[in-house]
Image 1: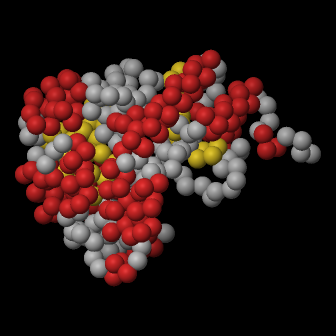
Image 2: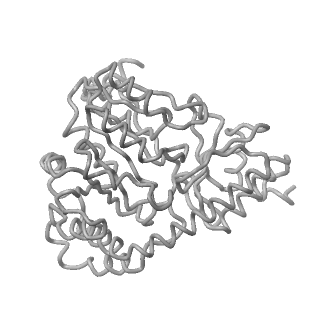
Image 3: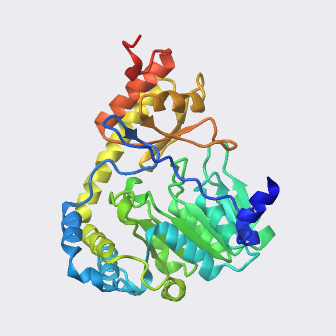
Length: 374
């Protein structure tokens, strides 16, 4: 058996053979009853202007390569956030931007500092690029400890730190003042992944610190708040010299024409996104209260999801019970987080259905779909 496996992977390099691949959330086959709350997708549609722009982009121009430097999209982002396009980098989702950050700024053997728990793609990218990872446990309440991260960074002479803010899977927000103080004292690059920042409230972003810190990269995405997971567009803010490095490392045409046009239309209709983000935050508060009333222990979330557990039933069992009703939530089998479920926020109707299913699971009642069957 070992010989067969070795033969099948004989073209894999040593690094690939030792890697642990990133595991995305389950993508179930959809039926009319499927409720997908496991990958933090937005329950509301994207801007109609973005959809219309992408439809209009599908035509004879597809025979041509898309703009390699996404000039129009960078200009739109720069205008919205009042920065120079030279400070904006765009990628095929923020995951590609992350990958390019490793390829551009990390050498083999360099050390990355991460809080634990956090987004599980970060260590995969570190491994893929031959980098080492130093984990720093969050505090007992799951809040990130910047001082502990800094101490670890200095001990190992770390070259980069990544802070997801709000963090995933916990949803907890770190005050931008603490991030600034960390970046001022840290000798390497500080990447702040703000994938969920639009659900965190006004003034939560580190964007205001960009001009004062030349070692800061801020990641954003069109996937979550803009409801555009399907077009895979992410972007970053950074000093022009860092953007220049990323531009040199990226693939020739990394974002397709329709995606660039759709993302530009979405950023120019940012009011649509903000309205939907506010709706999600309102539903998140109501759902958190409903969980509390049922004995759940839920971390304070600034994302479009909650991280919660119940003292009387395991997270794995709850996930299984919900799946019997075609409701999908995320469970991570890892230390400190295995007792919790991460639940994306859907519409009010979605969360009412979920609450009913949780009640049945807690009461030991039969799942909804099996009632009345012999």
